[in-house]
Amino acid sequence: MRYSALALVRGALAAHRNWTPAWRSPEPKRAYDIVIVGAGGHGLAAAYYLARNHGIRNVAVLERGWLGGGNTGRNTTVVRSNYLYPESARLYDFALKLYEGLSRELNFNIMLSQRGHIMLAHSRHDLESIARWANAMHMNGIQAELLNREQVGELIPALDMSPQARYPVLGGFMQRRGGTARHDAVAWGYARAADALGVDIIQNCEVTGFAKAASGAVTGIETSLGRIQATRVGIAVAGHSSVLARLAGFQLPVTSYALQAMVTEPVKPALDKVVISPGTGAYVSQSDKGEMVIGGGLDLFPSYAQRGSFAVLQSVVAATLAIFPSFSRLRLMRQWAGIVDVVHDSSPILGPTPVPGLYINCGWGTGGFKAIPAGGWLLAHVLATGRNHELAEPFQLERFVSGRLIDEAAASGIAH
Image 1 (tube, rainbow, N blue to C red):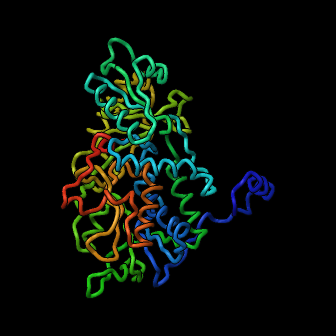
Image 2: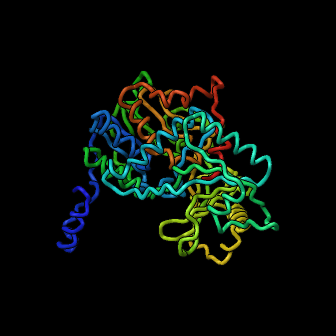
Image 3: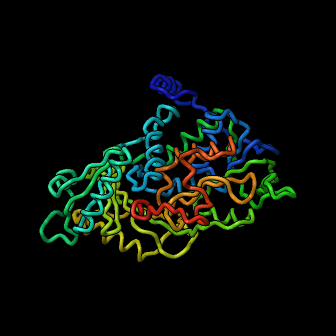
């Protein structure tokens, strides 16, 4: 069914009894051309682009839990492309451009809101850093706008701009195309579109191992629902990437951490920008429901728990109230954590693994959601063709041997 205003009217006239499920719940077949492990944003996007871009529709997406129940449903929905290095800038701006046309392409409203992303400067060092950052963006062909103190105050009236401010605001820089998108809508939109093209999305199906030929190449996957044959397999499981890699017989330079976020009770519109304060380690935006969405830094000890420590929660709240004192009257309603896959240079890993026929999309750390369209596109390309897309070439696993790292810790090593 194609969604439209006319379809909505027809549904209302039929007391909304005519809507069909957005996607099927099929039993797994014994064999597929390609299997993707992980029905989060990246895995679902890869399945969709395999069918749409490459015409490969005998594809299964396996999910241990429920669709979009991992990091895709546990992030803070920020989209942006304000990265420092050319390789990263090209990758994330490609993702943002895909986001900008995604609702129309998928016939599903992902609620993209390009409200603007503002980075605050609290010191002279911060001012020098953001000037370098903005200039690098200009050189990479991406819009960036330096702001003085007065301009920041006009754009974000709720900030503490008083002389007594604990963290004085000296300026900032903004990417106007940055903003937010609805996380579950992105997953649902890709799932619905992939299913319509013939992709099987199989939930509650845990991968327990990999079947291999004598040559070491993948021939199938062992799951809780039985063996599924496939000679090409993609892994897109974020914080559990190293777990799947061990099952396949190799190691990844990935450490998994919990990354917390929380929301307050809903209030009337008070913040129409995404605001991040590197000096405090906190960032804030307001959701369409009126909740203040708050995030901060990693719990800096390895963990697979989808919750965070109280110490980090306390520091994030304290930092937020230091820059937005008026928010002290709001009550926290919910808190959660995602499991993020962090590598040494805070850049992703996209491409083949040491196991023939097995490909991986991981290492996005705190930046996975904003990269979903690009990550899916690039994983689909290498699965379909056996060759890396040019955008993915700098992000191969072998860079940890060659030393050609892309250190984006300043842009992606913080929580936003």
